[in-house]
Amino acid sequence: MSNWMVNEGLSIIVILVWLGLNAFLFYNFYQVYDVGRRYIYSRHLYGSFLALARAPAACLNFNCMLILLPVCRNLLSFLRGSSACCGRSIRRQLDRNLTFHKLVAWMIALHTAIHTIAHLFNVEILVNARVGAINGTIQAVLSDLGDRENETYVNFVRSKVPNPIGGINVAFTFLAGLTGVVITLALILIITSSTKTIRRSYFEVFWYTHHLFIVFFIGLVIHGVGKIVRGQTEKSLKAHVPETCKDNFTEWGPSNEKCPTPQFAGNEPMTWLWVIAPMVLYLCERIIRFWRSQQKVVITKVVTHPFKTYELQMKKKGFKMEVGQYIFVQCPAVSSLEWHPFTLTSAPEEDFFSIHIRIVGDWTEKLAQVCGCDKTEFQDAWKLPKMAVDGPFGTASEDVFSYEVAVLVGAGIGVTPFASVLKSVWYKYCSNASTLRLKKIYFYWLCRETQAFEWFADLLQSLETQMQERNNADFLSYNIYLTGWDESQATAFSLHHDQEKDVITGLKQKTLYGRPNWENEFKTISSTHQSSRVGVFLCGPENLAETLSKLCIANSSADPRGVHFIFNKENF
Image (cartoon, rainbow, N blue to C red; front, side):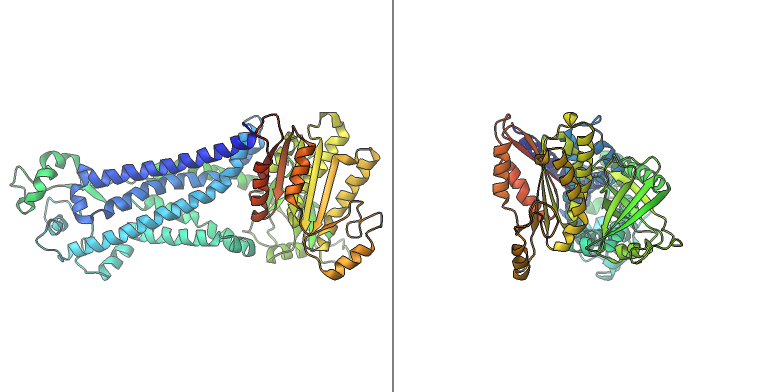
């Protein structure tokens, strides 16, 4: 069985098990409130909406437990980067957990919607029953319970105020109603701000509103403290048998030995049991991250590059990294609250770590200013700002040395993780090429504008020169594609096509125009490496990820001894 089938199979199994557990919880809790003896009288008041409210509540607790786990980045990063703790297949599943995080979020939204709508019907029914809109019925008798001494109520609405004022009172005077409004609004803001458009264009909005999950979980834990959902007590069930007494509701009373007044009690809140463990893990994770972020970071060098890109080289005591990892960066001089993720572009073999930052928003522009990137001349008095760094965190790119052949695909600034990979490969190759499992690299870089090539061209030129000096120029095959160009540019490029070096990059490999024919590229690679494991690594847009993922599957051999393409994508 091919490796991609194993990995895809594991992902499908995880999703099916998750869906199965949701269905199991929904069905079982629906049955408890739909046919359970304890809730016979509750059903006479609520109808089927009681079960429709409680069943999704159980699924909501289950999914809220799951959604906190991927947030604990330090734990996942430790497992993700530790080959001693888990194998490559498990580490790949940890990468997929971040995608699973989104599925769980949508499941939470679905169950919250069902739970909320069912409770809206419940409140309307209970308010109407309490004000006597259905006098002479068992619903009216049940609603009046609790008005007299030695009685417990089943209808939690105690005031006789008709709808819609009665329903509004329930929403804002009961703890369950108030917390329900708060957690629903928090969830709406979290989900809407997580859309790709807002996340990419207004990262601060996404970052701040996502922290409303703290409000969401606090509200969720105390939502059931009021115990408004009530059922008949076990002791009362022995003295008052609802199956026989429900038809004689007009004769209930303390003097009736066969059917005394039924007694009710609220359900104990259970949400905290579901979320306590991941909340403790998350709290520990935040403490670790805070401790790491307080360690001193020194900016040793600031380098400005073309295309509104600048590089920060830094040092931090005890900092250890692997290729392709990323860090969170905070600059108090810009903002004391904002943390932004950046891929490390340095190699583990270097005595510093670096990031390349492109100016695409207010935060990156302000950081460039406080770092002096807008200064034409360096001034001795210029003081570099303090920086806080959290990380590094693991990514799929760490697995690049586990393959015999690697295909690296970067789109625009998405090339940054491969700067680290290519540097580290070269260091390892120069140190001892015989121990390097990786024998061949295919590198593809797609950019819309010519300026985008300039900041990375120096690294490629250095690798190209050094590999030619060692007579191993075939170790790295790179293809650079300019996807956005006009006729005037094409004419200028054609005039210089016969020159030894490319007019844009200065490399011997000429820049290509348009987009790669991925089908042909994969067929060429598979025919060249007929019995190899080929790791395909992408840092780029989702549509390209979908294309490469399908091609990896289509071009992998069913024979275990044949070629196998394993797709990996950056997930942050």
